[in-house]
Image (cartoon, rainbow, N blue to C red; front, side, top):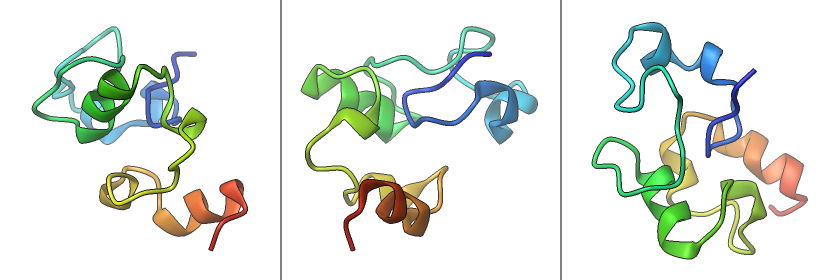
Length: 78
């Protein structure tokens, strides 16, 4: 199973399922990506997953694909 920068399984990502992911079939990785602000942000911060960022959850994660409330829940921040 591949896990994207956002933390979800690539196999369950709507863009991957529709073969519209800009990194299909490899999945999301931290790099400049005009289609994924999360991948770009992780690249700029030098992290592999947004969950590793001390600012998580942030405004970028509000755009999804994971529900922001869930991001707040797993981070312990409200």
